[in-house]
Image 1 (cartoon, rainbow, N blue to C red):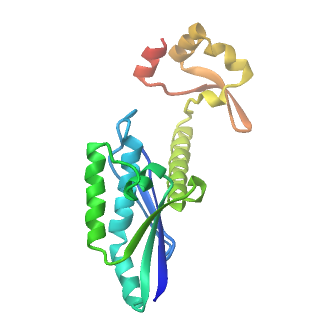
Image 2 (image 1 turned 90 degrees about the horizontal axis):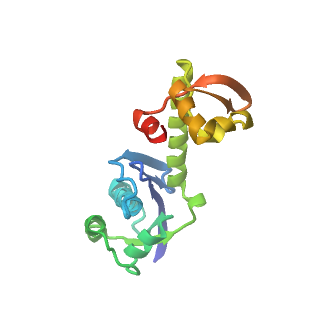
Image 3 (image 1 turned 90 degrees about the vertical axis):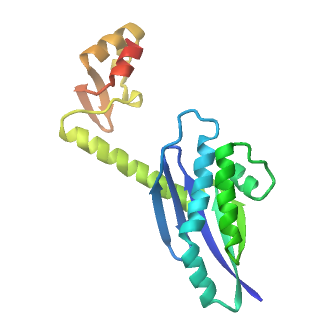
Amino acid sequence: MRLSSITIDADGSPSGYIAWYNHSTNASRIRALRPSVRNDRYGVQRMEMLAIYFALADNQRNIWRMAEDQSKKRVVVNLRSDSKTSIEQLQGISEVRDDLMRRIYAAIRSLLERMAYMIVFNHLDRTRNIAGLLLEQRRRKEEERRIAYWSEKGIYAFSPLLITPRSRAAFQPHNYSNALAKGRLHLDYGDAQVKSVRFFVSSSERHAVG
């Protein structure tokens, strides 16, 4: 019996988004979930595992239809992730140590039991993960919209990567506090040099620096 392969990439972000991309149908989806707790030991792994779960759950119908259309072929679903730990856990090589991840793992296994197909989990490099590229593209678009929004209001977001040599002195501990209080610094934004622009700093950040 010949084999027919369905390849799906999955990726998750601690910011609360997961994505999958089906190479066989060119379909994709990004879901917004609850962001992981900052500095959580298993936060990133949970999101990666959730991405794999939804990649399977959302594609159940597509997989079933393709299997029906190719009844003379054995369908193999190749689910890929750049999280080596998650893949090894699903392959049974590594142990799942987190309680919440065990629940996600159990949900994935429950899905697999209802699928009459061969499901294989494979690791791939992050640069080849289309789902990860979709999340990165989304992050960049959000950043561009944020910058455009504040630019329209004549206010620029502060980024330490944009400090010019002339403003470096302002970032000494004592000068930085004064600069925060005034809310004005000399920064570079790409090719255009902007003098004495304003920026937003949260009250907590201002307190931490001052």
